[in-house]
Structure formats: structure tokens, C-alpha cells
Length: 243
Image (cartoon, rainbow, N blue to C red; front, side, top):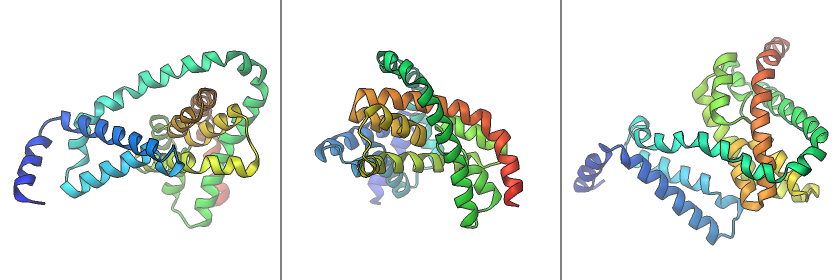
């Protein structure tokens, strides 16, 4: 990096507002790129923004804690944003009541298969026990997943990375998979995406339709709750069985 530019960057990095500004600019730029690509799954705004920010921090040698001093303001807003997802869900209340039983069955199947399949595949590929325990809650939104990983003996930091990767892969691949399987119902699409790919999948679902987003938000919340209850009971016997 040019010495003058390096000096300017060091000066700017001292301000906690830099992380916030970079995050907002990166995401806004990613949204514009996504619109130019007509919402193509590979042009997912989260993927583009994360890639841009990681590249910038790596190129400038900026420690993550320095960046997070400013980005924590966005992190704080995740709570209110999650609560606000109840608004579009309320608009779907009538259909939600009619689909209550199928949704509960789908939730249980999706929650269990997401955790068990990840652990079994990881075991077949020779992953360590710590990695397997970190993989188990990968389909749950990050704060809950990290708490679950810590409780069952996994590595919260590794779980956070796996959660983000899972969400991005789900957001990218869901549309093609739904088309292949002939699944057209927005509610079904959204609920499956929210169960498998948490917040990032939910954001993608809202880009498709409000109905898909509402059911994805419901699935994301319920899957987090169910996984937090089930995994501490399910994982120990599963790990013993795997030896």
C-alpha cells in the first residue's frame, strides 16, 4: 500500500465510525450489484458485502476487533430487526393457522436432519469431535448457534463461520433446488429456507416475496428454539454411537 494512503488509513481506523461506514457502504454497493444482476442468487448482497469487507480488512491489515468497534452498532440492530419480522408474519396469520400441523412436522424434520446430517457427513470425512460439535447447530441463527455450540462442547467461533457459510449456500442454491423439485408455493419455499439457512436465507426469501419471507422468519425463530432444546439431549448419544 502507498505510504500516504497507509497513513490515512491508520488515522481513519482509529475512529469507531469507520467500521460502521464501511459496513453500510459495502452492503449498499452489494445491493446495487444484486439489482444490476436482476437478483441472481450468486449476486447475494450478504455474500458480496462480506467478501468486500474481508478483502479490505485483509489488504489493510486491520484487526477484526478494530473493525467491530464500529460495526457493533449494526450488530445491535439485529435484535430489533428480528422482532420486526413479526409484522409480515402477522399478515399471514390466517394461512399459518391452517398450516400449523404440517409446519410443525416440517420444522421437526428439518431441525433434526440439519443437525444429524451435518454431524454424520463430518464424521465420514474425518472431522474432529470439536468440529462435529461446532457443525451441529450450523442451521441456526448465529447468536443462538454460538450459545448451543459452547454448551455442547463445540467452538463458538468456528460455529459462527459455519453458520454464515450455511446461510450463503442456502440463499444461493435454494431457487435452483426448488425448481428442480417442482416446489412453487412461496410459503413452503420460505419455511424450508428459513429452517435450513436462518437469517441470510430469510433475507433472500424476502427478496422473492413477502409471503416467503414471513414463513422463513417463522421457521428461523422456531428452529432456533427447537434446536436449542433438542441438541443438548441429542448430541451426546449420537457422539457416543459414532465412537
